[in-house]
Amino acid sequence: MPTTVDQIMTRKLLTIASDASLEDAAWGLSLKRIQGSPVKDDRGRIIGILSKNDVGVIARVPGMRDTLKASDAMTRVLYAVRVGDSVKDAARRFVETGCQELVVLDAHDEMVGIVTQTDLVRLLLRNDVEL
Image 1 (cartoon, rainbow, N blue to C red):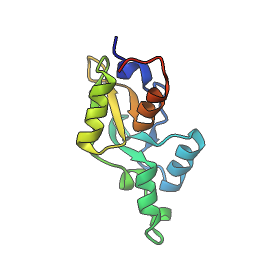
Image 2 (cartoon, one colour):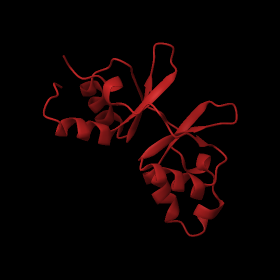
Image 3 (cartoon, rainbow, N blue to C red):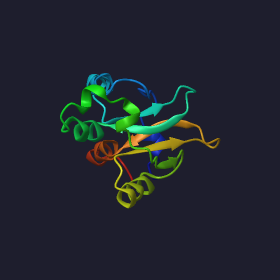
């Protein structure tokens, strides 16, 4: 039976407040050793994803990293897959979009996890998996 995204997704997510300093957000990503994290507004809604790549681009602009918030550097377009979708579907979505992270939604369109390209690579390294 094919492996599904909910079998490899990260369920316990670090979420970043939209008004968090970019420096604090970068520190959180590094501390948790994750590639990216959802960004929430003051109502708790997910409004984007902040990745290490986003932080890295901004860090190259002199003086910007110290003054920007997480919401200034995040990627505003979210790409999603659903619980039960195959990892092959997720891989296809990564290729089609060029994104690094996919939000995983349940039947009620609630975010229940995140899948990264690294999750797919880890899965490929296992020898007991059917794709």
